[in-house]
Amino acid sequence: MAAFIIEGGHPLTGTIRPQGAKNEALQVICASLLTDEPVTVHNIPDIRDVQNLIQLLRDVGVRVERLSRNDYVFQADHLRLEYLESDEFVRKCAQLRGSVLMIGPLLSRMGKAVVTKPGGDKIGRRRLDTHFLGFKELGAQFRHVEGRDVYEITALPVATHRPSANTLRGTYMLLDEASVTGTANIVMAAVMAQGTTTIYNAACEPYVQQLCRMLNHMGARISGIASNLLTIEGVDRLHGAEHTILPDMIEVGSFIGMAAMVGNGVLIKEVSLQNLGLIPEAFCRLGVQVEVQGDDLYIPGQDGYEVQKFIDGTIMTLADAPWPGLTPDLLSVLITVATQAEGSVLIHQKMFESRLFFVDKLIDMGAQIILCDPHRAVVVGHGRKGLLRAGRMSSPDIRAGIALLIAALSANGTSRIDNIEQIDRGYEDIELRLNALGAHITREKV
Figure 1 (cartoon, rainbow, N blue to C red):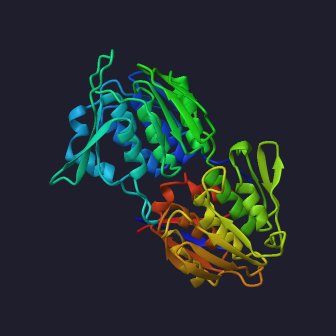
Figure 2 (tube, rainbow, N blue to C red):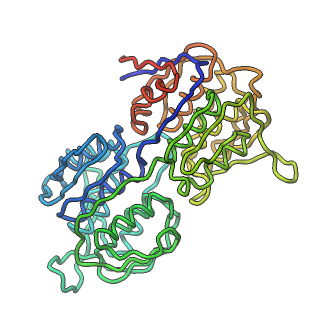
């Protein structure tokens, strides 16, 4: 266990680069299971969730070569089929939510996968129905294994010219929700299915777009990329490929929030602006100045920022939505930034019923927030008239953890954040990178 000790009030100045996108990394790393040829992936973030997934792939027999800190080669040419059905494998999957993305590739290539409820953030229910319904549409069967609390998923035999008897069949499906991981999992299951698969109401986040482009480079035939209607023509096999992961849009948004609250001129380099969607605009609606400089964002030092109102004068509302709407992963940061704005804003978190509960920690620090229900909070900004107070808190999940770190950086006094392993799951060397900008953050072993 470890904690951050943060001495607040030190302005951040300088240049910072975002890490590779965590959510994309989890998807494309699992996609390497679809072929026995080498798959090279660049710009992989060196964070806890990704490292745990890479170790899990090693455990199942994937050969992993680390070319540099953020560049790897994966080759799944000798998978350990007996390990994939072991209790140890099931236990490790239950501790890592990203492991759910192994199901589609294993089902597609091996014809079988074992599933248990995966771990991850404590942000409310994160159901897997979309994944499983998609697999069923492709012809998979589920069997509950008594005494192990797991499900075996098996591809039904179909008439095919292919060597394997366990082959999924293409079909049309309408997803019940535009789930990012659900779409990714179903796409990976369908790329070697017999016939054509059409997925309507598919998620179209940049992570999914990147996955589809990588799969096409591996020999898949996916069209409709960047839309909510994907068409996948099944192929016999996939081959190796080389892929570079996008900058992490959530980290970019986190840096904008930090620069707004405690910055004195921060340049965020190489953000892949076309893949940020509404993120810069969301901060602009809180009054934050965001200057576009090519593919970089510059956040100048500001004495204050004022929340905008809608055209009819009503209170500003920021709500999450499927892409190209505002990502839910940044609402925690936006709430924190709003505490020091001039004016009020309603934050509406639609997807997870427990994600806003961290605001009690901001309230303890002096923020004026009304938690209306599990999905809505009204933030009444201080307008910098009263700084947040330092305090001791614990990180409940990755995104709330970074939001609390931002609050502590702006607070008057020294704060302590426990359970920072949650932050480490999503942010690479965060204290070192922020200290290089002028922050005073110390990591303390507990």
